[in-house]
Image (cartoon, rainbow, N blue to C red):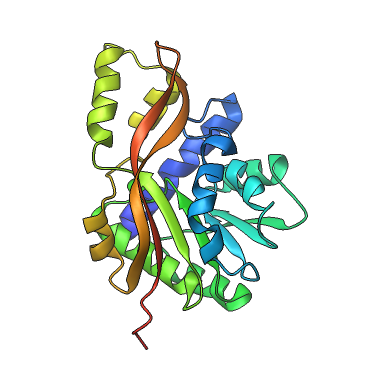
Length: 243
């Protein structure tokens, strides 16, 4: 597991450090109006506003800063120091802070929980980077951070995403635009998320709401539309009948 953890952290640091160095386009980094603003109505009324909100896998903080308009305290965390540096430089706000945190190191989640207490969690496009064994650790980190009061909202690429990406490869005859090629060749996309996965990965949680959606990207297709990747979302909390 340690080796997998190093590979995961290194892959994301390479991705974000390259983006920072070359000012390279980030496929998922669309405007909040096509991301967090769409997600917000699904979880806003469920979350206690006096709890901190953690944007888990915040990247450069593009969505984090938007979320700060709706919560008293928001924290963006990411495994990549380069991503956190970008977030601090470009998407700071008085009620926002950013930290480096590895979801696969449970002790880091425990330390943060000891510091800030129970928290609500928003995580967009973070789960697919992990293999099935790592997802268990990811879920335990979220469970620790949420505690009994926090609500978790997650959205990630869905079951049909692999077919969708394959269709793009075929469309471009293998000569992909930079933002697509960097994702597909980076080693950070390992799977999709389904309702069945949630039941397995989060056995201590109940599903408050879920459904299918798309994740908007910045890539413009030849027909002039943005590429939209099939996605699945779920709203979770720890099951109330557990001690």
